[in-house]
Image (cartoon, rainbow, N blue to C red):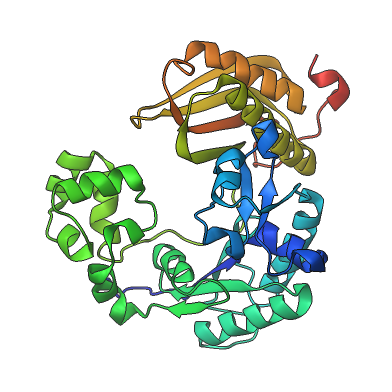
Length: 365
């Protein structure tokens, strides 16, 4: 890989975060197959799965009804997002003990740039060990870490020794590591792309590296340029501590294709509720709702509508997203991904949220 301006990046990923918090707080769940999410009777979705239930094939984003078929003795627990946010805050405080360059990706994972750090320790690996130890002491939870010269490699590394593991990819080892990596293990290459790559003889990084950038673009579109770079360990993205949020949204890819309209509408209500929680937490609201749909053949479409006022309440977001279903073929075609995004937020020119001139209660009439 390129050797100029090599950074020291750590990717921290909490292990089965929501489920682990529940097992920590309720001793009767420890060692048991715990599923955090909606009830299987109510068309719920798995938000998190403990490692005890994953061995039955249960994963996050799976319909709860399928999860209970795979593991009938699973324990279903309702999410406690206020608790998860508090634990996430504790973990983030630990990160800032070591560096100011922290880029949270979600409640349970973040990138840290420790090239320069508060304890003047030259070894990113030792820092990652210290962070994992501090997390365990403070929260009684485990985290896995990946250490590498860039974000892409650090993300891959953090998955290598889960749970409660640490993996390091040194700059001089990166290209050899990537050449041996199975194509489905590359972060960002999903099932559809993996299948397409294998159909043209790309089974691992070594195969991918044989293709020129032009050939990859001709075969996979503009993302071909991305594939050309990542197999060579090239990722120039910086760890950004102050990302300006231009939208707030959530999406979920399902492990099986969905066609039940009642389930789909209920799922969109769940997504809307989570987005509304984030809006309230950020003290913001938005004017544009976008519904994202990916059909079972991987065609992806989006439909949007905008208001002349700000909205933030779950019912307003959900009702709008559900109404946008009428502009899609959902119900006639099976769906493998659904997402909602609220954009056109009340941001100032500098990217900070502006105080609304009218109360939230009146902003979504």
